[in-house]
Amino acid sequence: MRQINQTQVTEFLLLGLSDDLHTQKLLFILFLGVYLVTVLGNLLLISLVQADSQLHTPMYFFLCNLSLADLCFSTNIVPQALAHLLSRKKVISFTRCAAQLLFFLIFGCTQCALLAVMSYDRFVAICNPLHYHSVMTRSVCVQLASGSWTSGVLVSVVDTTFTLRLPYQGSNSIAHFFCEAPALLVLASTDPHTSEMAIFLMGVVILLIPVSLILVSYGRIIVTVVKIKSAAGRLKAFSTCGSHLLVVILFYGSAIVTYMTPKSSKEQEKLVSVFYAVVTPMLNPLIYSLRNKDVKGSLRKVAMRNCPCGVRTTH
View 1: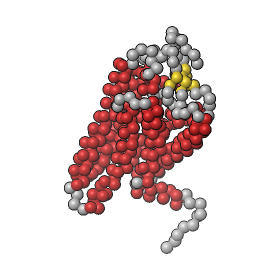
View 2: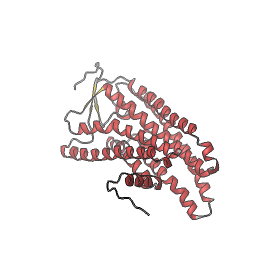
View 3: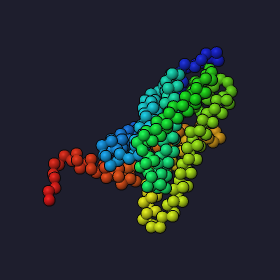
View 4: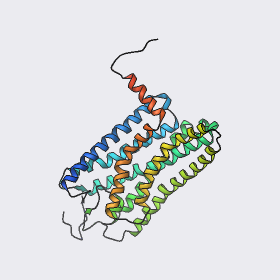
């Protein structure tokens, strides 16, 4: 759509990941497969936790919230990206772009807070095991989860407001496959420095502060685990943290590269965005299920319960 300088942009053109038709078809197949695994994996994890009373613990309560945020995060982006990979005109209205940006930030920021909360849960479980159940009560868990979602909403509202308060006139081509703040700010008709600083400060709040809490928690955990005399005890303690730590590295690493480092090339920014917006929500349930004996045991019980063979062993 052709714009003149005095006309406010009413829709954006998403340039996507590639102009090549063959590449777009391959990306469609790849994205569709990843999205299906994301939906099935996260729904399965949530269902298992709800169905198995042995998984009704604080750690799995927070994991359910993380899976829900992952599911919503991916659904906010991937279906539209799939539709655009099959269409020639990759247009999104200003209103839909604003909504996508808002929900992208809500679910992404909530994940940041939840990962910090989960590290605190592991800290209490390993460093203060005798007081774990008195500290991580049901009400405390609900408050921590609610606080994570609330912080995600507050930070996203601030970021979205500072992004969309700028006038967008003239160019409406976004060099991205979805509406993300850095990609939008470069199209602003005025200097976006104030908005960039506000978004950077919100990044400090929702990225660096949780990362600091995670580092402190794991620092204390490492000190405690090192003092355990038996190798089996140390291995068991570390195994309860391994999945969470791997998810933290994957999610925070890519998010910090995008929002807290100097601007890189547009192609590099898009590749990083593909990783944390498309791939990471798929990896989280796989990491927790494949590395967790409780989840695998629960999955086996459900599979045996629903086995159509109808054979029961008698003793």
